[in-house]
View 1 (cartoon, rainbow, N blue to C red):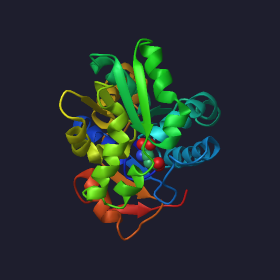
View 2: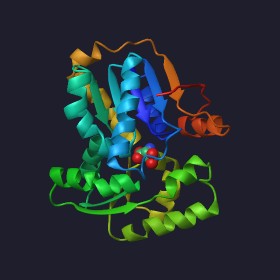
View 3: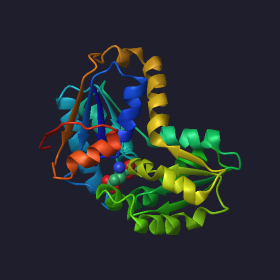
View 4: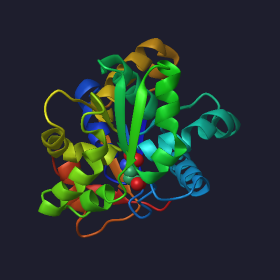
Length: 266
Ligand code: DGL
């Protein structure tokens, strides 16, 4: 199976794109809804939670896992790839959403002025700025942490007029300063049209879902040794660490259709 992990619902927008481009594989989604948000937590905690989630998915039979969470990709992925995986599951793979998003932004920027909105943890890690400048040292990067957006989205308040005010405030530093904006948190794609309306035309918006799905297609082509280990039964299972009354409504908003989830303990 291909495992897809996020701290909550955001990763469903990434999974949605995987299912569009690669529908034949078996997928296992895990949302750590009991412990969201990751974006305000320390490195130590994000690493521990992400390792527990990845370990759980491997024990369920996943061979390849995508961290569909920018916070986990920015703060835990390197350590998992370099230290944890070789010791615990050599031969299995964990990929993230950050590098595909960065590559796409560098390919699409016309003026080399790139903005990033993300969780506090992702912005503090400086991962986007470092990776963008690694690919193109000439890009200028403006970052803005948006700590209120995940709680707003997770409470289903994306249509609330207060959301527009908050977005205007968060997006003010980018006006006239960037030609490309990375939505550096998988949750934010729910607000994509509002963000586009505030920024105005002429801005490229980069969302990790489509971009990561295209990179996954490419990865599987380049890695037949992994591709042949993935089962192709077209099944999808959704796991969560918490099932609240609002769960069904939010899952359906992110996924685009209702889904039934199983409650698990990591
Ligand atoms: N989905 C997570 C991300 O992409 C954000 C939510 C959180 O703070 O846990 O960064």
